[in-house]
Length: 444
Image 1: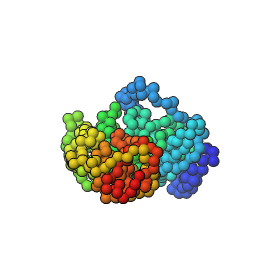
Image 2 (image 1 turned 120 degrees about the horizontal axis):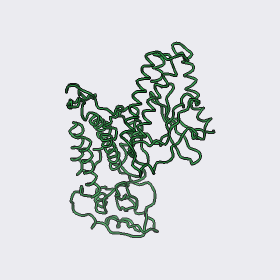
Image 3 (image 1 turned 90 degrees about the vertical axis):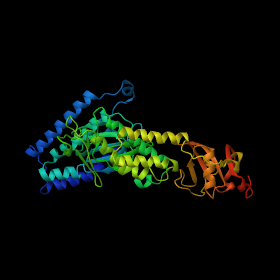
């Protein structure tokens, strides 16, 4: 199906639904001037957007080196050559599609106003003016575009371009073109190795540190949920910036600075310049604690690192740490892990193995360990051959192991642990570490 036809096919159903709702009372599509209250809302959104744009222009600019890296932005012309269009998701305000650019074949995300979403629907029910309500919702997209153009961090989704065109289908009058990511699935994340879960948390902490010190001031993610994040090439990125605050809560006294969550309430100080200093940073950190750290940090972590991780959980859960202290604590854990300093000193098990060269392992199913880098067999990240020998000794099924050339994001090698010598095949330069006790039960 050609790109434009595919786009129309995806949009026609919601448009027909919208038309049916508009033609039936109390939905009426009005060409007249919007109601006064709606005009006030539109004017307020426009003023907010103008202030944000002025602030962004005055306070933020990309370094020359980064400007040189930025490709020519996409525009309305690229919407005509799309193919393989599909729905990614729909929220209360926005519809997100995926599509392939032509030429080039790059996959991108298209974000537009969700014509039949909750925001527009409630607005039309209230004001009876579909076009005005669409414009009201479109301001969220425009706000997000300004923020994406201003903020420069690898943990923020990349804006490829935008299109503003009144002649397009109603849902596509305002379109943002973004890099495409994979939505987070927390259940799946709980099943991946601890090292990968730690990276997701570290990515998040680095992002929150940037948001606390951004060119626009401290930024709060008001709708902080795992669904607002995606993975792009192994990197965690926030993809939804329309519901953020670039200003800290104003106050006259300490009682005005209350930060409430479903399970906890924090009482902050009203600063001398009449705002609740640090409230945006603390809001982000506690949400990171309750949505990410609690689930991803402690489980199956190396035993020696667990006390430090527990301190991080307690300090962020009580908001004793700010973004800077949290980042330093994560960097300490990373250093201990990469350097191998976390390893507890134990007698070496290597003397219980002999080395055989010139073999490689069959890619076949064997005994499982959790969490493994392979669904077929036990494949774990190790610091060195000593740690691999210790792991093999701990697993009763393990008879030999191989240190592969594969590396994790920390640079640690992956080791394969196997139970059967018959899985080894001649014809490689790899070294196989075989338990001496196993050699009496099999042959190479």
